[in-house]
Image (cartoon, rainbow, N blue to C red; front, side, top):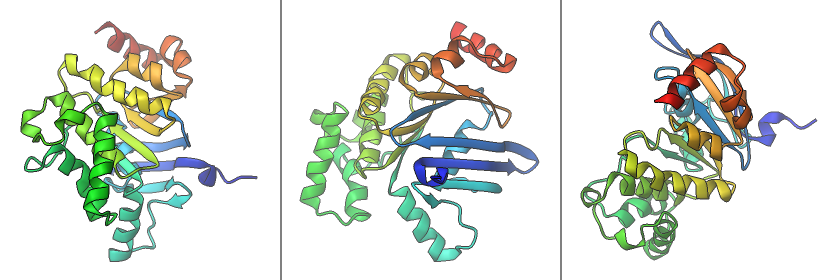
Length: 257
């Protein structure tokens, strides 16, 4: 029998997380197979972003296990520098895109994209620049390589952030409300990039409030509320015929806004 932790790209097992007296994640279980796209939906404060940030240890879980590509992310037996090395190795294989773009304002678009391959992978600058151009082209920003973030629109900044994450050639992409800080007219240009990644079978975990996008792009959807996975399954079923009352209420509210 194949161990599910070895088969899945990401495996979350009985994960709990509290901030003080507030229990944010309560026994969360999640499995993401290679090449699959999982969307996580739910109201604000439900634990969606905390779950995503826990996957690459930006948040430290209180209990449970998180596995990535057959390796346990949270390893209590590792301390100090050994644990830092372990986590940094894992994070190099996980691309993460946040609500805010987090670009370095003093670096051009291509310098933002090539910084990590040069610093972390010790890639030669010429090779990194070719790679950077490839990924800027992939997100439709070939003509913006020499432009500083202050001269880019919100959608363009987020696409540079996606190119930066892709330049590390990750095995999984984590998107935390990647379009929530954008004006409505800029949302679609970022969604189009994510749809293209889906067509290329990039493994993705997407926290989103874009219900139509989640339904279109996902292989599976999870509805989280008050720290629990209330309902999960095929997006077409979950979005159109949810069985749980909390899911029904949430979707009714979101789809009529």
